Structure formats: C-alpha cells, structure tokens
Length: 294
Image 1 (cartoon, helix red, strand yellow):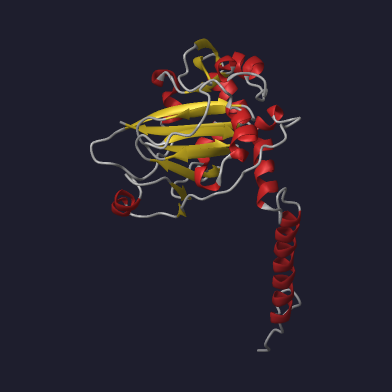
Image 2 (image 1 turned 60 degrees about the horizontal axis):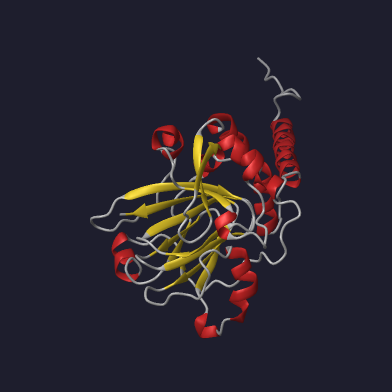
C-alpha cells in the first residue's frame, strides 16, 4: 500500500506560511492602532489636554487667563508608603503629595461634565463666596451653576463677590458618586474622613485659611497649592481673589517668605497637616474632592 504525499494544504511549509501571514496581520493591526492612538507619543501636558477634552471641562478654558502657570514644587512627592511612615514623617509635620496610591479611574469617568449633568444636574448645590471666611451662600441646581455661574476668575472681582462650588454636599443626593471614590489609604488615629466635592473654573480658588488636616485630590484639571505652617500666617487680604494675590503680591515676596507650594493633577493626592494655612488656585477648569479629617 503506497504512502500518500502531503497535499499543498497540509504540508509543513504551507502551515508555516499561513502562520506567518496570520501573525503578520496581527502585528500590522497593532501597529496601525498605535499610530492612530489620539495621544501616542505625546508629551504629558498634551495627554492631559486630551483627557480634559474628553471630560468636557475644557469648554470653560477658552481664552485662558495669562499668568496661570504651575510654579515651583517644593513639597515631597512620594509613592505608596506605610501608614506608620506617614504618621512618623508627615501627618503632624509637613505636607506631602502621594502619587499613584489609588486608582480612581472609574470615579473620574463619573465626573465628566456630561455624566454629572445627566445624573446630578437637578441636584440643589450650595455655592459659597470665595473669600477667607465664605460669608455668603447661594443655592441653585448644578445645571444652573455649570451653565451660568461657572466662569473664569475676573481679576477685578473680589473674593466676596465670586461664587465657588466646594463642599456643603448633601450626602444623600451624592451618595452614588461618593461611594465610587477610593479615599487615600492613610489614616490618623481617632479621626474620620468627611468628603467635600467641588467644581470651579480657571483662575478661581480660595484665599488663605486653615482648619483640621485633610487630603485633597484633583479629579480633572490642575490646582496650585500654597501652604504656610501654623503660626506663620502669610500677608493677604481675606477678600482679595487668589488670582490677584498670585499675580501681584506673591512675586514680591522674599525667598524666605515664599510658601510651600506645588500644582497637583489627577493621580496625585496632597496631604496638609492640622492648622496649616493654605490657599488654592485652579489653573484650568477643575473637579476636585477633599477628605477632611476630624
């Protein structure tokens, strides 16, 4: 009985040839996807801009205010550390910025402009004046705030005349959103955290004030922080808007009068100790959440 010769379809060389074609097709598809990726090989700033575009908050940043730069950073930036090390080195001593210690990607998706408008647009929120003591408060819906009142900061507008959304959140109305947030993995014995959520336009912020310790995280955008230790209050006008202070007063300070400062962005969490003076400036439209410890 004769032995059948391999046909063209089942010969080893033929199988190798089709395997080669298959793998080549896969490689071509992968390369094509990479080449068409929106932020392929782009600098970090460009990638952040692309993410802002996807989030929908960039619509408030057109005609951005000049002078909104990130400034210096003289605050420690650290990856994950143990809670014991946090308590020993930072909790009672100085501010610190944690990098990539939590993954709030899902929370970030829930905080796009479109997502917040669709689910929480009819929620009543409390807006406060952006001065040191936040004397005046106004209630409106989130949709009204985002459509009419959230604007870039005007230099000649006093803090007491600027409305700012941060805190005073009704937990029953925001519970679905807050339950998706992964809080910083650090704690101080005897203290519990309370969330404070906010949204604000470029150039806005709050002037210097102090309270208990806390963690602050930017979900979308960028926020510049200025901090001074207890007992070393900075020179400032409680009613002056923070943009005016940063552009006009801060550059005149001597080097030993300068603040602890840094700009934080998504995936970064700033911790500030008890009774440290601090002020914030949103460099672009920003969504942010703080965990106040009390």
